[in-house]
Image: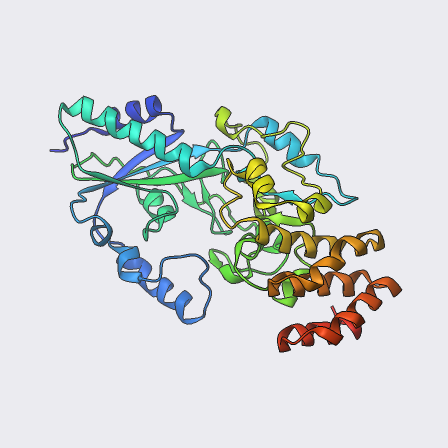
Length: 380
């Protein structure tokens, strides 16, 4: 007999502050192996854990596991939705994904999951062994949540809950007790709709439920190094993340807004949500941390943001940006030099061309030289 009933779990989940909660056994997910192997073979993985065996067997990650508790927390507040829709289309304002509007969800979720463990222990009258995962473990959180019956995986590979759509954070709590699993099969509601696939700027959604993560702009804004040329124009003015497939989804049109104050926009006027691209280029590590250190958008650091901002300024095609971009032609980081070169080539004009020509004289890196030559030839 289960030590913790489903009814009790639901009550404790609400008390801990989660919008959805369910449980499943800690048995493996062998059905995932073929797809994960195919993704790895085709080089379509992004930040995923490299060990497939660990991804499909919870006990590899946490040997005492008997049950997996899946939790979801909605992050799209009504204020966040309104702010996202107000994004300025013109000018030098970039934009960041809605999930980073408020506090870092990792910290918020971990605190609530620890609270949940404390509530379970109080209910049982004893300590339990547990381990939490929020984007930090090998497990495929979406599949755990699906098996726990709290939602479904859509054609855009995002996880949907009935009340809050795909604007949810997921967490997995492995415990050494048996929790009752009352799985209610929730069917995918996509039907024949392919709006998310059609909307993806880079074609990362190869087919319903099939994604090449290395083409996803959310991944690309967070990747290390040089952004591949084929994705730079598609980046638009994104400096962190991409919500395009989510906004395109009809299921997300009328979802209930999150009631969690932690995910309210950090600045109601949008200074952090629509950062001034010129300011991003001028920031120090300290000023960047002061602005974004409390969010989930800070983990890659300032240089990644500046790389993205350079590409975004190139996409504005504003000649007034040339003096701001030019200093980065001499930056010690190659990805910043290349981003500046591409931006100047895309902006064009005599001032940009003169800066590129002068840079070509002193540059010694072959990859950078190639970018310079392409920019001078007018190739984007």
